[in-house]
Image (cartoon, rainbow, N blue to C red):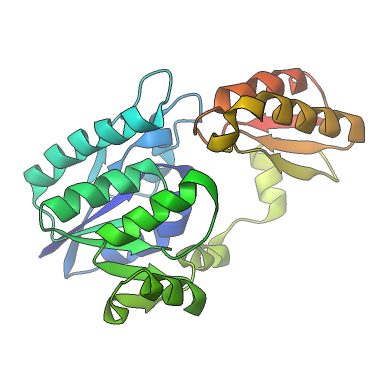
Length: 262
C-alpha cells in the first residue's frame, strides 16, 4: 500500500486539503499520514490541531516548530529537522503540500532532497510579498502540480515546469461547502447574537513591519468608529502578528465585537 503524507501548518491549508485527505483515508490503495505543525500547535491561535483530530484520521503526527515567539526562519529550519526525521521513519511514497508558507516549503525541501515525490496544491498563484516567493520556491521543488486554473498552469509552464506534471483540479475546499452547517447553527455554536455583522481580519505584511502597528491601529480605529458589529478573527502568525494583537486588545469587553483566535 502506497503511503501519502499531507503536511498542514495552518487552519487555512487544512480547509484546502481536508477533502483530499478524506479521499486518501477512505481508499484501499493508499495509507494516509498527516504531519501537523505550525499554527495548529499554538494555544494562542486556538490549538486547531484538535480540529484535525475530530475528523477521525488515524495517523496524525504532531510537531511543534516554534517557541513563544514565532520566527519564520527558525520555524523553517525546525520543520526541516522534524519532518526529515518523520519521513525517514515512515518512508512515504508521496508528500502533499499546499500554498505558500514555510511549513510546506520545509516539507518540499526534505522531499526533493530525499528523492520523494512532492505534490504542490495551488502553485502558480500571485499573492505578493514574501508569500509569493515561497509559493514559487515550493513549485520549483515539487514534481506534481495541482493548480486552480489555466492561468496558474500557464504561469508554471513559464517558470519551466513540465506541462505533463500540471493538473487543473480547481480549489479542493469547494467540496466542503456542500457539507457545512447552517448559519444559525454556527451562530449558536459560537454564541453570536448579532443580527447584522461583518467579519474583520487583518494579516501582517511581513515587508511592512515598520508601519504594521500604525496600520493595524488605523484598522481598529475604523472598526470602532463605524459603530457596526464585527466578528474579528486573529491574523496568521507571520512576522508582526503581535503588533496586530496589541491593537485588538482595545476591542475586548466591547459588546459590538466577538474575537476568535481561529
